[in-house]
Amino acid sequence: MPQALTQTKTAPAVTPAAPSPNREKALRILSKSIYKELRQNGYEPKQIVALATELISQVTSDIKDENPLD
Image (cartoon, rainbow, N blue to C red; front, side, top):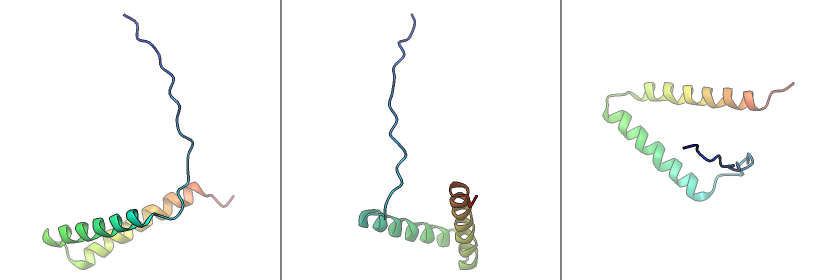
């Protein structure tokens, strides 16, 4: 039996404004939870800083790819 094709609409890409207070709070809670979990699993603060640095590098690269200077 052939399947019916359905047309779906996709939402336009939206650039979010400043994070809402709830989202900011969620990010603080998440970061504390991740930090606590890493420390409990034996990671030293220096290693966690290296992880944070790599995350920032990835985000920076992503932003540069989205907004080329040319």
